[in-house]
Image (cartoon, rainbow, N blue to C red; front, side, top):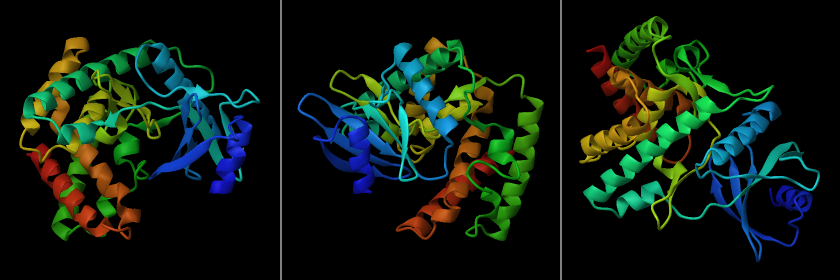
Length: 311
């Protein structure tokens, strides 16, 4: 990919800059270093987002920044475009945000500080949703939908979790019941649930903390339209096994509801929905290093939460 990166740097007048690969998960992200400023150059995975969806993502991020939250700002190329297609790969450049990711900071923190970080996270998530609701989306704005169809339909955004090969017959039966009940509840309550633009991936690696405690939100790759309770569940799910999970949950909710109300009656539903998405996501990734172990863990969490929801 270095040839593509070199071509991209020319289009952004950064040919003399140094660059280093810093993330190679869904997208390849390079840190681009110049004497005066650093940037993040993203090579987007092929066929995941259309050009229109990526353009919408960059417009959305700019609106969040203008609204007062710290997110990466798109940088225009010399042609004035915020995105280019090079060698068939969609490329954009963002300003670089410094700090540690929240997962690292949490590991180094005592319980009181961990709870304080989640309280701040809850506040900033609520502010994020307020900004999204106030923003007038431009013509042509398009993003994916984490709605009933996107989560539970025949072609969900992250694959058909109920067909994961690692499921036992008992697991399959449980998830079939869960899918039917969850879909019925979402359909019945569709007009009651807080719905709008969500980041959809507020996991700890996508939240950054600097020395002042300020939180930056990064990686809008999965963002789209969805339920706000799904957003909170995403932030909490990966901490469900932590000894202080109850405190983290309460801190996040307290922070959020200081800014914005939310119906907590659907908490169990959306925790289970978030967990099942990972069971679907991992279907095509079971062959990766650690993929089988990860699959077992995802299924265990999802079936436990689904059973809890079913009651």
